[in-house]
Amino acid sequence: MRSGNAVANPSPGPSQDSSETELRRQALVETAVVLAKALDTTVKIPGTSLYLGLDPLIGLIPGIGDVLANLMGTVILGMAVRLEVPRIVLTRMSLNLLINGVVGAIPILGDLFSVWFRSNSRNADLLRLAATQATRRTRYDWAYVVGIVGGTVCLLLGLVALVLWMAISLWSRFAGIQ
Image 1: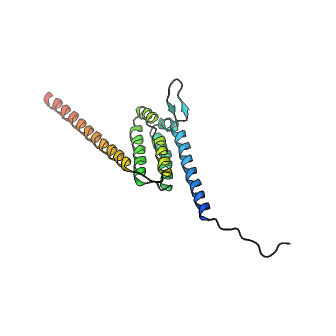
Image 2 (image 1 turned 90 degrees about the horizontal axis):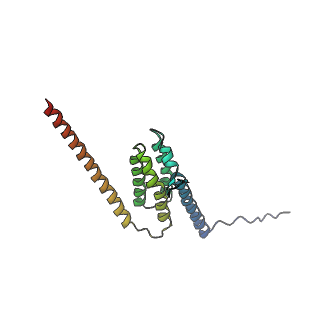
Image 3 (image 1 turned 45 degrees about the vertical axis):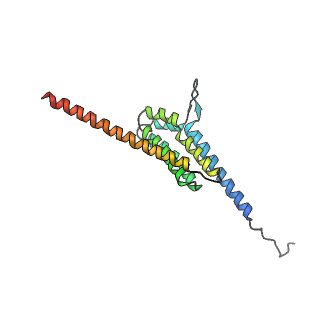
């Protein structure tokens, strides 16, 4: 017979809670790494040192392929948010996705860029570093973001100047024909 004095399960102590949290963090990081590998480096291209993943393959689907590939890549970004990595790391990860998405929209060339750039692997590396570092240094992160934004602005200004030059050149040629 059982006695009426049943012992309740003791509540988990602080060390058990922190170890469970750490296990969850590790599981999320490992999941991000596996997803990045599937998207960027699933199969080695024979005769080269390059790897091919689902990202450039899905990107070959006209119109929607790059959108689907980037949506799958945002899962890693969502894991970073869940792990509460610093905002500057989230910004870097977002920029990697943006660069891959914009360049990836160019048929064929964008898919080749995806094979080289590997935005998902870059993001998984950033996530792993940010989630495992006790002290989070962000000076390098800010320099990277400022460089990317500055380079993007310079590139856009250069493209605008090129388009204006082409328009003026065409206008002057057609206006001179009359």
